[in-house]
Image (cartoon, rainbow, N blue to C red):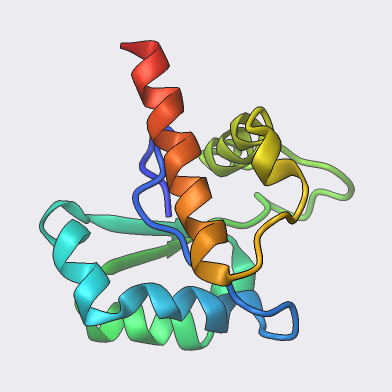
Length: 125
């Protein structure tokens, strides 16, 4: 989960056989939510997050908006705001440890993702 400027607020990792929308619903754990709940205003997602994730978000009173293709365009189309998460992922690739799967546990993988974000923010200051 990132903000509109591409800073990572929270991350969760899960097995590859779990659908992304179901895995993203792990972000709604109560211990995680108390960290970012007061500042959260809206979720912007693509069409893959319909279902469990959207139901949980609306049940919690979070404004949920799905961004998809505009009109009936064929082929590649730039979707407004969606580039933010793609840019964040590309910035994470500068951290050598995140490029390959070196970690033995999921918690380590998430921790290194957050650490790379902290490092990137501190370099900008």
